[in-house]
Amino acid sequence: MSHWPRQQPGSACEECRKRKLRCDRERPKCGTCINAGHKCEFNTERLPRGPKRGSLKALRSRIGMLHLPYCLEERLLEQQMSDGRLNGDKYMDLATEIQAENLEYERDPSQPSSNNSVLENVELHSSQGSRIPANSRGAFMNDLIRADLDQLYFDRVHAIVPIINKQRYFSWAKDHTPGNYRACLQNAMWTLAMSLSSQFENMRELLYTETRQMLEERDLGENDMNVAHIEQVQAWILVTFYEFLRCSYRRAWCSAGRVFRLIQLLRLHEVDSPPLSNLKVSGAVNEDNIMTEEKRRAFWVAYCLDRFISVHNGLPLTLNEEVICTWLPCLESDFESGQHSQGCSLSEAIASGDQSPLSPLAECTTIITLYGRALSHYHVSRAEKFYGNTTQDFWMRHQWIDTALGQRQESFLINHPPVSIAADPILLLTHMVLQSTTLYLYKIMEPITIEEQCNTMVIEYQKRAIAAAKEIARLTQEHGYDIYFKGHVFMPAAIFLGAERLTIERNIHALDPQTDEEVPIELESCLDILRKVQSVNNLAKYYLNLLESEDFIETHVSCHFR
Image (cartoon, rainbow, N blue to C red):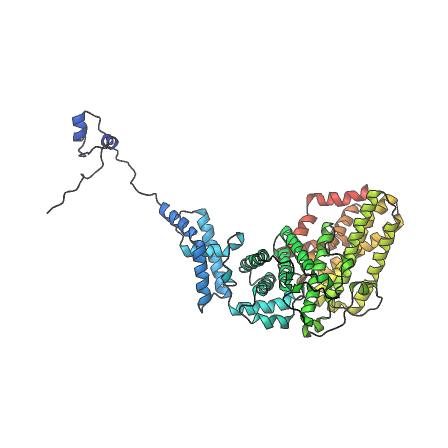
């Protein structure tokens, strides 16, 4: 039995199409149009029916995006269960390939894109808002990378933020399920370690996003004000340092505020006061020496962080010095061994005239306390001026801070020779903070002395300020090779104060034939270091932009000619 086709080959005429009639496709006129007396026309350039080229591929890609959360979780689970996880080099090659595919897809969305490629693209850019499954912690890292990051942390990060005891960390890090806050702390340690190495550039943003998400989820889950965790504070401290180093200043500033509130919640300002017994910290009633010292160090690092941020923004301090009942950090050797050592208070360390050695963090704390007192001195002097009070109290406060600073500087230089200062980033920063405090004191007194025509005092302090700026430039030039991955995160802040004073001196005496010829050279050395380091330290970029802004010179020079 033969089957005849339902319609003749060829296209129907326009009239039959319009009236939905059966067309016999005869040329030049079909039979239907002849019988009806209609004009018969054939369109020979009609486009073929069906979807446009590439539309199905784009549709498949859009459907694939809807399945991303489920596919991502399945893929990460498979990676965790399989023996052959991605190693570091393979992940970096994969990330580079993903970036290229993503750029190509953005240029032409109609091009084919497999589900795997889209998945990998979301993994790479997860910091822009995608949520990472809770059971995927560090899924892109194998045990070798984790061990490498642990070593990198204690080689580089611990010298800058010495808040974690190495022996205690490795005692609980062996457990693959260390607990919620300890897992957050471990991730934060690895994140900051990645930022101090060029080896993990393609991983650090993913790990940072994962770490911050974990911490925020834990914070949202806590409702009891009487329960706190020291690991939570330590993790947020490390995340804040990372954000100052690699993220925006505003984000880091907000995270620092969270650190200060957690410090107050744990009452770390009174670790060595009589026990306050309603607070359960980390679920432990009887703490060992190491945990107690970790609390002290977490508090003092946050205390120094508060001073750094507040001084450079001219804002009031958050952690009040007058209520502190926590000893200064002990020596590093005692901290690592867990030995109990009799500490001293902050007020005793500043007031005593002896030259007993302190740990680098304790040394930095005493100097930066004077830095913070200079800020309080500035705020009080502004209030006095607002209420029209006399300036006698101003000079008493100013002289006291200046005298205490001179005593601490003498003790510091005796206890720490240049070799030890160069080897320790905290000691190097402390030496710069000494000079920065001198600069800040001059910056506070300058408007008042100009108004009162205290020319002799102005000249004396001006010389000391220039000498301090030159010392910062010298330290910057000598240790510039260490500032990339071994320098302290806040070193650009001290360099900024020195460069600020040198910039003012250069512009004030630009037309003076007897001006110091070394000032422009020293200024350029400071700016050069900031330019080089800005690729790995966001604070350097932040302060460099301030120094090179158009209104910087006008703002800072005009005050000298009022």
